[in-house]
Image 1: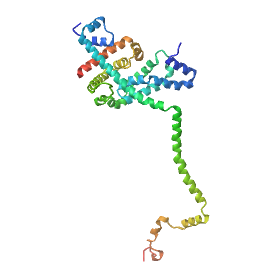
Image 2 (image 1 turned 120 degrees about the horizontal axis):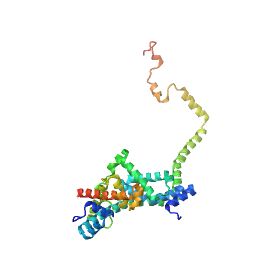
Image 3 (image 1 turned 135 degrees about the horizontal axis):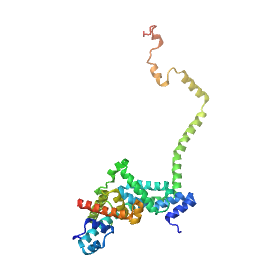
Image 4 (image 1 turned 120 degrees about the vertical axis):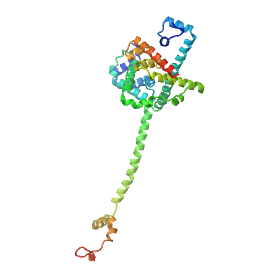
Length: 146
Length: 189
């Protein structure tokens, strides 16, 4: 063996498949021992960082589940459904009022309105434009205007 | 035989299928962190790791009949997780994530390191980043055995079962992985 462990010997020591000779060298060589400890620390830091990251993530998720057991989830779902129904129920009420009011209307007034509508030659929004057209007495036989 | 978490799950499933899902939820609660840890260490992206972990349990649930109890539940789940990580790495559909999976230095600085000075924290974070990046340069098999051994603390026979190779092969991969990381760290210095 050289003065220090080779990279392969170092790796074997780290993994735990080293020979007696390599182990003996580690006991005697402070530099190799420190090198190994430094590498072990680096790997331990990686492990603890990953573990902390995952624990942080899982502990952020788990309490939410615990806080919402099945009964509470059912109650929450029922509340959401009820809240969803409120606009539906409120929007149906005025329609019912209008329907009731229209049924109470005078039938004659309704017929008058219908007759007026039927007697129109053009649609009511176009009626103002009809006044702009010349009347029949100004129209000549050839189609021109007197 | 006294029922363990694994055999208990199977026994309950056989006796009363109605309890199956409830019990599987317990199983997820028990092993989710371990699977997530390994997947996160492999892909270096928490959101992606969660997706793959979810896939892992979904696959386990779908193939629950294939579990014969000849290895521990953890080993079986890890086997599924290893395959998922492998197919993720190979799947071109996930290439988009490669950009995201690189954890930037400024993100690492925000990671929690309780009870140490900011200088020490910076030094530790730098070291962690270097080692983690070095694991990404390893071959898939080397990285898998390295992370299972040193992040997941699995022993050699368990790793051998999960990866489907012999124990001596696991040791060879571990030695090569350490050499690879050291080489990489030497270059980055």
